[in-house]
Length: 203
Image (tube, rainbow, N blue to C red; front, top):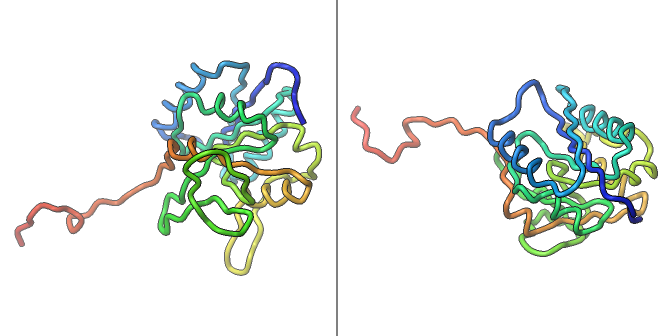
């Protein structure tokens, strides 16, 4: 599956009412260095799967060739879009770890291992969608909803893995850019307490 025309990339940003300042700066730098046509889509919802599905619908209406998800709790290089487009894959992204403990990798290999991919382009089974480029033609082969939460016992399976499994079942291959993964940041929060300080305290 190859688009012959110049790519028209929709930047899908699911969010709440506000985004992180560091994300805003990353997005601004990326928009200044796209190298191709780009559209900005912001789907505001308290439910991330709903926001992602809304981004897909809007990208289809605008007849974009690709949808690049960039989550509002991520930081990324200015050339992220260009680097992912160059791979010419139906689904390609970069990975990162969870932003709260346990900080395990969110990429899952074909063998079922959670690992960090830190170089090259590698085929994977599951990939987080916080920095993922998807060719719009992929969604034509899938049924809606494309993203959803699924209950697994007392846990919820994320909408990103739901999409990956759906795409995999439809015959699509997912790819992870290890070099780009090293340059992503997943923004979290840390509560600082006196006990965490390295300085001497007086009782």
